[in-house]
Length: 103
Image 1 (cartoon, rainbow, N blue to C red):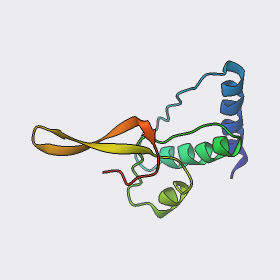
Image 2: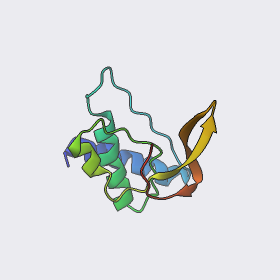
Image 3: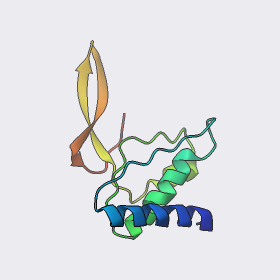
Image 4: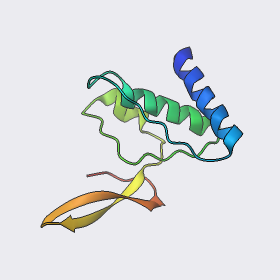
């Protein structure tokens, strides 16, 4: 893991520990493929390694094997199926964190 990513994860970890509350961190990039999801997953793994609860809601890997590999070991929110206007949709069910296949 690069020192820059580790440093960012540790700064976020310190912020969480100081406030004793959960935090939402948003990753913004100007274009697809710049590494937002990849970096988020690296930082999530670092937080998990430091005993901070992390749960992913929905991750789109865009078929990237490296990104999919980073999902291994991360808790992913279970998606429940709902019907809306005749179509089946998957929505996040925050009450039931666990591994699932989203779709």
